[in-house]
Length: 119
Image (spheres, rainbow, N blue to C red):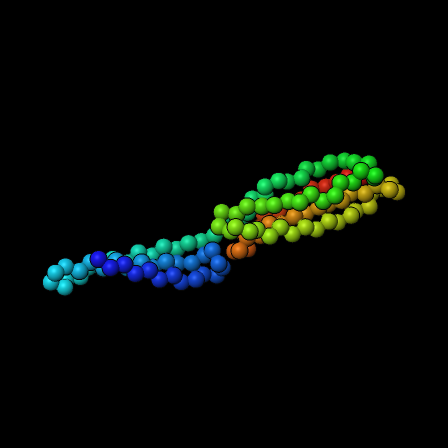
């Protein structure tokens, strides 16, 4: 029996097709071939390991942005981007920090987490 496998890349690193050919040949050179096609897709977004929660603090106690990591079922390293927006409140000195993190895997599946710090 012989075995041959060919990989055809898809639209991203974790999506591809495997085509496997199994060929059985008897002593009289009669052959039988079986083709198996395996389609691999990455459709699962990453999952955050630790997510900060909304809190209210005094103006002199604003915590630094936490380091947030994420895991993915196909990727070893997941990029997590961070953005912070300050929105002034209705009174002088009051504001809200909206911190957003986005984890994106190799196939552009994304998970977003947003939390706020009220001051």
